[in-house]
Length: 185
Image (cartoon, rainbow, N blue to C red; front, side, top):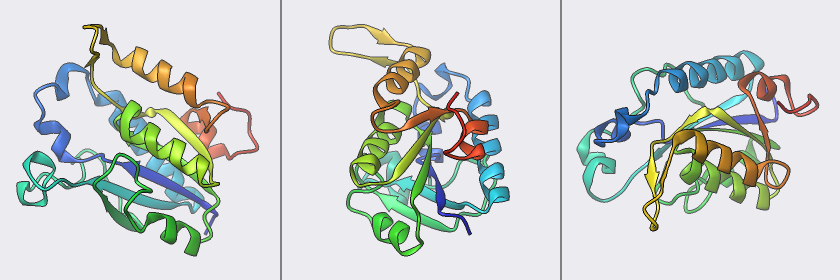
């Protein structure tokens, strides 16, 4: 086994229940996320499924939607349930990563600027080397307090700009699978 783990964060059916899920076509995300999962498995990386849970609503266990998106096919090494934005806060994930000798994390999943970015910042601060694979993340339009609606491309570009070189190496699926010694995309 390698010292790398792929985190597939919140890629769950709960999001499909939101009215804005199809504002942005998830087809490219599904293809790139699956390519990353398949490549990570081929490299011997550990795969961590992270699912978000809340007491009520579409993110509650009782809803039946806290399950992997049907388009993504994989068996994780471990499944972690979180109730915060970061997969590393309030979960056993940091212990599992340490016990399994994981030094490097590859971040992917849903939402680019929310749980994926927050987990990345947290992981960096906690000492892990992090690759953030923007093309293997998905998000939807976001309207801020001023009324400006951020497009998916704007959100992904903003996230990449604030993470790259500070909290992570922002890279492609191929770059992440090539390893940390390869040049970033």
